[in-house]
Image 1 (cartoon, rainbow, N blue to C red):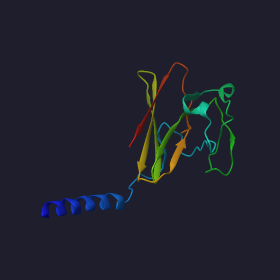
Image 2 (image 1 turned 120 degrees about the vertical axis):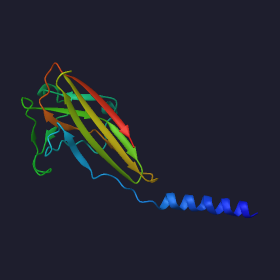
Image 3 (image 1 turned 30 degrees about the horizontal axis):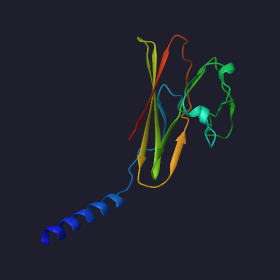
Image 4 (image 1 turned 60 degrees about the vertical axis):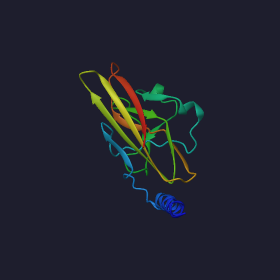
Length: 155
């Protein structure tokens, strides 16, 4: 009897301890590495299905079929993207829980002519919230002969 009581108390303690833990997430990171730090490229509230399955590299106006714009002042003023100076990368990712933070990093490997776009989705808690993001980022112009690898990691 004492063993059963002890196991029940231990089980309940574990459940309450896990449910009461606070989420400790990194601050939302706009981006690191090659990402232009003060550039904001917004996405629509509801992301269409045709965007959810792709990797996007927009290097010129004719490829900007989503009419993306950029803000360099925190979202007060938006302007056309100058594709002679910049490239836009995008990759759909989603997450769930009480809090979700998308951490983005773009690195450039000059010797292999390769760009690596890493997105880490930090998720915390057991809420029924769902979050999705296109993770559009502005980077300095990527040469045509570079390959791009996209990677999403969920934590």
